[in-house]
Length: 181
Image 1: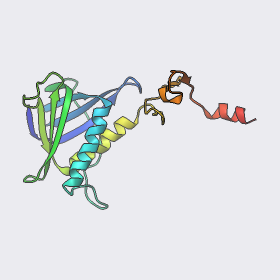
Image 2: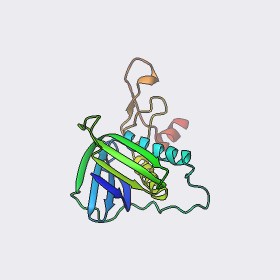
Image 3: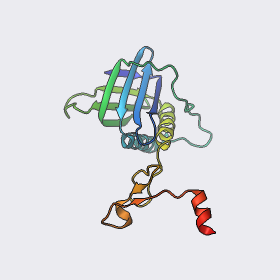
Image 4: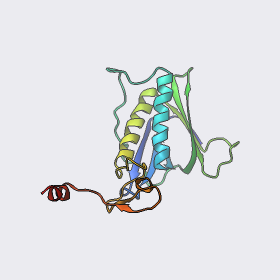
């Protein structure tokens, strides 16, 4: 479904860290789209948009005007379009000076058109990146050895010893102080 130029685009995380679901929300007037993505897809999309804009020389410069990174209000519970995303594509249209965004459903064949497509301004795309980055950052901390999320109860890090999956407990400030005594 081609939404054309969209007036609103953001991302949100739903649920508790470790069990969150990520959604890209798009709206133009009465038309709305919910694009369900994985955390890594959302991270990669934000990074890719920034790179495309940098290559197009439209990265945010100090003092440049940009759209405020404010999450959408009053987004409907049922969207005009609801897609579980398998692939994402972005690009830059030199003629219109707009970011082009496309999403393909998990089961959409390679040769089929995108299930969702739209275009928006560089400023709105950068604001989307800010909201997406904030949504992703609200999760569990990441292990510096294996780059996997650390649960509140500890973490089984394969790289900590190379062959066993032992749980590495989280160290809190109180237990560190007791150990130092």
